[in-house]
Each structure stands twice: as C-alpha cells, then as structure tokens.
Length: 172
Image 1 (tube, rainbow, N blue to C red):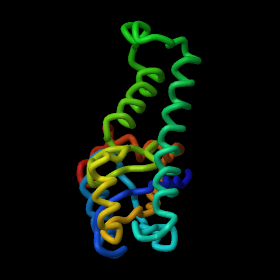
Image 2: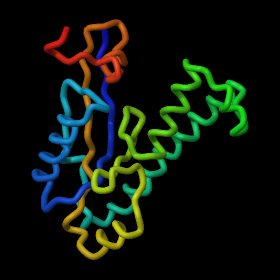
Image 3: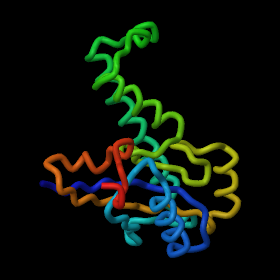
Image 4: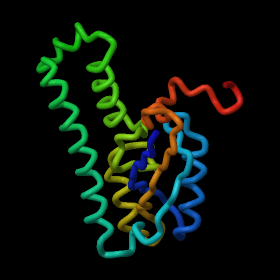
C-alpha cells in the first residue's frame, strides 16, 4: 500500500488566488482524465502574472513538459521505434501506452505526466494570443502549483490513476 503525490503547474485567468483555487478544484472534480483523493492548490508556491518571476516560472513549467516528452520518446526509441513507419506495427501494451501519453501531452489532455497545463486553452502550451493578454493584464493571470494526492488501498498507487478502469465509488 502506498501514497502518491503528483505536482502540476496550472495557468489560468482569475482576479486572485482564491478564485483561481476554486476554478482548479472544480476542474479536477469534473475531469474524467485524473482522479485524485485530494487536490491542494499551494498558495505559497503559486504565482501571479504581476510578479517578476512569472515568465521564468512559465518557461520552466513548459520545459518540464518537454522533458517528459523527450524521456517518453527515448523509451519508444529503446523499444525499437525510430520512424513513423515503425508505428504501423504498434501493438497494444507498454509501447502503445507510451505513445498514448505522448499524444496526450501534445494535444492537451491533462494527465499524471502533465507538469504544466494551460486551463484557459486546454493545452500544454501557450498561444501568442494568450501571452499578449497576460502582458496586457498580468494581474488577471496566475500559475497555481497544485498537488494531487492519492492514498491507494492497492499495492500499486497508480491503479487509482487508471481512470479508464475507474468504476466510480457507487458502482463497486
């Protein structure tokens, strides 16, 4: 039995930390992509767009996602997948899960591997348009550091994250 804690930086629009915290909580309550037992927005690790460190934090968060993608691509390569043609023979299993995770990180579906998530654009990146909006009104944007916690009753705490197998609390 074990516990698992996942960290995300969430970019969103809001007038203050508390309103952003409520939006993040509602998002995680409603999404079917991740199920946490507890979602904590850490005020002391969150940052407003008006703070000078905001853009550095944003770039670091984006880089963290790119690092995850790079590591997953290395895993694919180690399994013998080096060209797009190699994907034609992709069978279900470990390698297809790696590919699936990469696709999620590229197309905007949040997952446990998401280090940065742009709630405004449902994306793992940030558009030039949104960058311009943040520059025009930085006080209206935040990056919230969010910790998702799972206290799993199983041997593998990752079992609780496998939402495609999740049956719901009332359907056991």
